Image 1 (tube, rainbow, N blue to C red):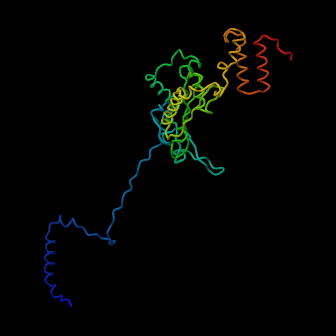
Image 2 (tube, helix red, strand yellow):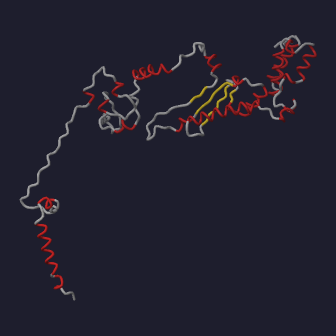
Image 3 (cartoon, helix red, strand yellow):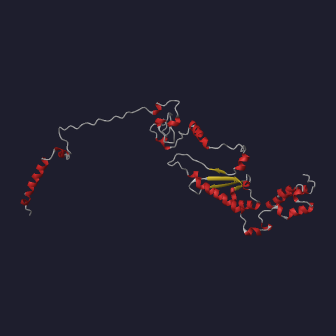
Length: 317
């Protein structure tokens, strides 16, 4: 058992602490206020006066008709109804209900707007950029001259749609077009170039089209397209050692200037082939006959060219 009489001396200490606290200055009493969790009868709680926020009229009611819109909406930003003096409406409602107006309309805030690109603002920006631009060359007054001096045509697309991100994966695609004749390749290099590009060459328009989309950014795809063009050009002009051993029998197509047909014409007429009348029609007919094979058109064209070459009368149809 515990003897409680041994705790009696602590009562004296308790009294001393009480006396010491009561004799302390009043400033120290106020530092430790009692926490009253119960409502005391008769105590009055001061009422909190609500703070009223002044409500001003919308800015649209104070705008002048001839205001400078470029200063009101200087850059791209989310739609703000109090700054746009237009009765804009957007949203889906039930049948017969009016379309929500611009106030408290979340649909108008989702999509990007072009309120900062009005025609007067664009004109002002163009005037400011003129001092950084050079005038268009006066000598480039036709499409043929432009094609001659600027043979490369680079095409890309920008997209604007309603989505969480303004970036579209299709915007990275770059299309590079040029005419094969602008490279000024010889026959051997041209043949090798066409074999490398494959179906990217259109013979009717003499146009090569290279499309790059494997890189995530448009700039990277543009650099890759220029790299492909450079590699194709230098690879086509490169001559391998085994190409020097290639004979006429190894040629993929018939070339009239390198065959015995040209030598036979020169032997018959006794002059160079270029001086023989109607030699272009004859050489083209022989080339088509050998490359395209025998058919009614190539045989008929070959017969008519032979008669013109030898100055023989044409058959009566």
